[in-house]
Image (tube, rainbow, N blue to C red; front, side, top):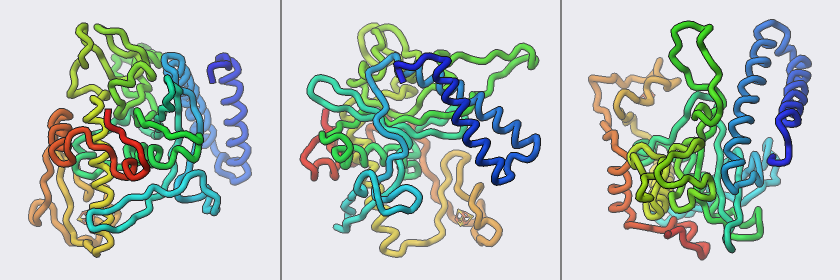
Amino acid sequence: MGAMNDADLLGQLDASCERVAARLREDSALSDARGAYLLRRSRSDLARVLHAQRFAAARGKLRPLATELSFGMGADGREQKDLEALEIWTPNGRRVLVRGYIDRVDVAEVADELLGVVVDYKRTRDKRLDVSMVYHGLSLQLLGYLIALAQRGETLTGRKLRPIAALYVSSMMKYELVEHPSKAKVSEAGAGTFRPRGMLRQDDLPVLDDVPSGSRSPVYNVAIKKDGDLAHADRSDAAGSANFSDMLAHVEGKVGEFADRILDGAVEVNPYRLGDASPCSWCPMQGVCRFEMGLSDVRFLDRLKRSDVFARVSTRVGPGTPIRSDAMHGSSLKG
Ligand code: SF4
């Protein structure tokens, strides 16, 4: 990525778009003006994302190692898989295998360690990791990928990988308020339009972006105070070492807990409400479901600040807890 100039990069993007367009034409999906417009629009969105990713890569030591990395399953249903399934032991002593795909894995070699980051692309605007949702077990996928990488990444590199960040990369620009369309300007990547969002281990921030004290990262949602402490900790994507490993341990515990519930046949209708969010608003079963919001019991979940989540998770799993699957494989995430 670092060796290519902008013209090379855009040339490759055009070639990829042309390959996709040819396939879509064959399938008659591009026969109308709307299809052609969508392709043009996607191409310009992707060009901006590429520019932002290039900018991010230049700030840190990470380099992409794999894309579309499967664990526990082969691509397109094939048997061949990149990594073994994530293995989790449930609170009731069951061994559960979890499978999935990781969009991208980046690595950096620092001292004698190999550090790993998972990236999840989202066709959305400004996707963030809501730690309240993670705490309640409603958003386990992104950090689950990181646990899979910690447990199974050795297959990829021949060396143990220590996970340092899990990040969403949105592919659509954030909306900006402008007085008139003629006054709209295309934001540069450095201004945060395609800022990768998620959770990163604060001690390893220099691997992603060496942010000097008293400044904020132009790439990640992290600012460092003059005394070296994290600024705006409740809004930052950085987490202290103990909090970071506690969150991974919590996610692993939640996956195990839910696996037990599924295997024990817990299928009662019991939707949650977190602020304005409820699964009923997008549930395809709404037309036939007899649950009535406002009349039936609903599980009200607390919307928590990041610091409250860290405090609760630390109490639940014990401060600085290594993820259990990783501990079973002989390494600790404890900072
Ligand atoms: S509509 Fe019914 S089935 Fe769907 S989430 Fe709500 S309670 Fe559950």
